[in-house]
Length: 106
Length: 212
Image (cartoon, rainbow over all chains, first blue to last red; front, side):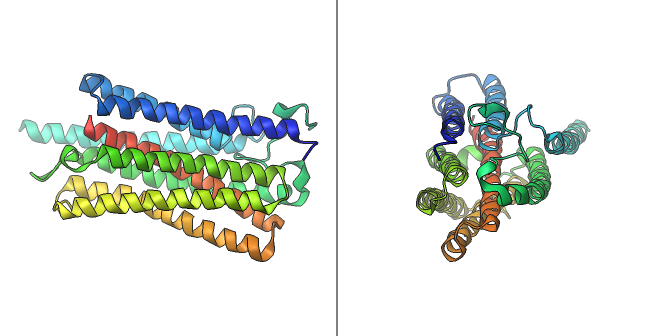
């Protein structure tokens, strides 16, 4: 235990930072929605951006993913999954939205 | 890998590493944890596509109740807080697993995590039943079918993770902190933190966007 004291405090601080940042990034959009702090279109963008930042915070501080990893294939796995998701989920939303608009027009 | 040089410790896999004090468990962890990450990422794809389905269905309420009539922001914020805090308490359990050989603090942090997980599940079930009481079950509209495909699936994952946590508490009691038990706890931790990430997507895309 003694030998790893520095490492222990470093790891502890990472979790504390993670909790603090995640709480902040959660509280802001909840407060904005509860008190109607912004016009709806701006609000949607803020929720999206803050949510994305929070996902990155969780990966960094709770799952300990960072760029200095010496096992890059793990990061590559995650990034490849994100690429697949962007193609499949983004494609689905794009095509279905486009279809809905064309069906409405006729 | 000296204690002073904390930032440059070689990482074996994403997630918290067991470190040099756990020679056998540390080596064993590498393969199984990578395999578990492959599972997590396939689960990520599954959730991602259900999010896409939800996004295409959100406006199709078929004259039934929409997000504003159904979602309760107060209940959602308590659920979110419980799940977020549970990620931290599991982190504390992982930290004690990495830096100590004593079972007691690990068990206490895991019990706290389990409590928070059960609070989350109880509140979520209450939300679902009050929605169904309002006549807003999955059969009502495309929007509600997509909602009940996505959100309860996350709840089911949390229930499974809670069951897994109970099993791990029993295993810790029966086997002690053997290398196998340690790597299983490591994987459970990854699963738990991963479910919190999915919840960030759910409260942002489903609840907050629906109520804004």
